[in-house]
Figure 1: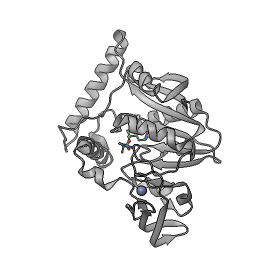
Figure 2: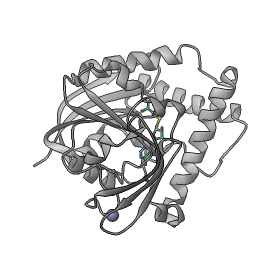
Figure 3: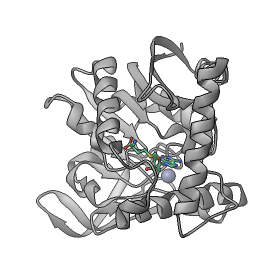
Length: 286
Ligand SMILES: C[S@@+](CC[C@H](N)C(=O)[O-])C[C@H]1O[C@@H](n2cnc3c(N)ncnc32)[C@H](O)[C@@H]1O
Ligand SMILES: [Zn+2]
């Protein structure tokens, strides 16, 4: 959902300065259901349809550089839809829900967010909000709107083009989503822009380190799972990668260190053989 109240924190995601002029054709209790949001500076227009505001810059969709990411996202969407339609076809579905809930609850403990405004980038169904205290304000962004997005402040947008004003958020979280982003430098610049100077960025990212026999098993398990999942999926997108970027612990740290300093780190294993997730808590570099 997008509400009229949210607009005071929002701006055009392309010029990142323009206020949004609203032309609402339908609203319900402060929620915008149908209308247009127009940049006051350059006139770009962002539609709101069935309660979902779409801030994906239209020019990107015809940009050749974004083609591979779009194919990748289509593949991701197809696998997600198939999982919902035919859960029994999926490999590894047993216990998956409760395991991911466990990871999120451990991550919430790790992040220790007590107050403020949180932006969840690549939020999917927005499940992290259930792990936050009631006084914390939660906002989600994802290019793919899910039905659950009607239940919390949500806009359809990209991590590389965030439709919020400078310094809006006290916390940014990215959960199992950074390896799907198209342009990591653009994302990190946006992360620094929308965070307050005292803000924190909390990340969960799978890493694929090969150091010793256990990590070799992990990398192999990951590969087998991906291949089985591919075979179990009817709609295939053979050209598009499953992830845009794959990280090792070193490559992840090296990248984030360009923009943030790492305040705390923890590794998390769902099972001894499942790929390790790294939890990082970071502050903007000055
Ligand atoms: C594996 S899901 C994780 C969803 C959620 N964070 C969770 O843990 O349940 C990755 C999400 O990243 C989103 N995504 C892909 N590219 C993105 C981009 N450029 N900006 C923001 N989100 C993106 C996908 O649509 C997808 O919902
Ligand atoms: Zn603009």
